[in-house]
Length: 418
Image (cartoon, rainbow, N blue to C red):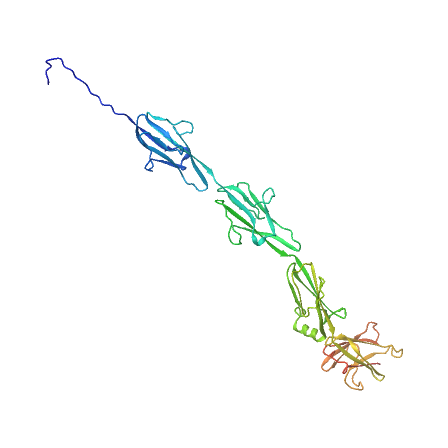
């Protein structure tokens, strides 16, 4: 303790220390997940302590710079299908309260971000393997190469091939009309091929390629066989036949392809092919055994094979009366034949006709009548009633194996009326 002995002064000294306040940098609640804020060092931060009266500057890029050197930079997040942008700072967790320009108390800076969904072109095209077979159109019916649609748009494809996007865009494949062909839409693909699948959600520029198939309409192909202007029959059956092809296809027909080996042999024995050609359309050039027609352009095709008949011969002998000249048989070589015997002499009318095929020079042997069968060289012939039904009018059905006689060695046919 000191004793005061004279006038004395005491001087008080004070120190001042400037106050510091917390400054918070935060992402506004309406921008959660769209970005973040960081310090100058790049670290995420909630707040800094800065002196009273620190001034605030906000740059054009959104960076907050305090006069004490502190700062905070807003960073937009990356988000698939969206463009995210920093939009501004506010002094409260809203978009109306302005930020302060001088720090004079605890302060908040709330960063706001906006996101904008991206749109991508969606192309609807006809695949290169389907050029000319169809087209694609928008909902309005106009031809369309693409439409801009938002990210995340979903895709559905109807049973009829219509592509419908969830934003309302759509495209309908239309098959072209093509003479002689049926054209149908078959599928969409995600590339200009028939293997890449289409997408179900639009996340980038996207292609839909429409595929169409064409098939020629049915064409009837008639194959005809004629000799001397008349249809050919073997074993009682007409040889003409019908098959089918398609418009635009190639046709190749061999004259024996539709027959069994037995019928084909009989045809070749009985006839000699003279000409094979196309009647409809009119292409008369002889193509021989196999007739071809490429790229069929008609609804009907008629192919005709013309033959020369291989002729056989018969000599009639009336027993006890005399011989007749050698004549050609109506039927071709090796085919079943029919010979008619009818009385013309009044003396024979009403009698019973009998026949015999024999090599006997005099015609001796057992003659047969209606309902009876004889043999010649191991093959049969049968007598039946003629068209008039009279006993003197008969027909003789001769097996094709007998109908093989030449002009110099004709079939020896004998008959008589009893």
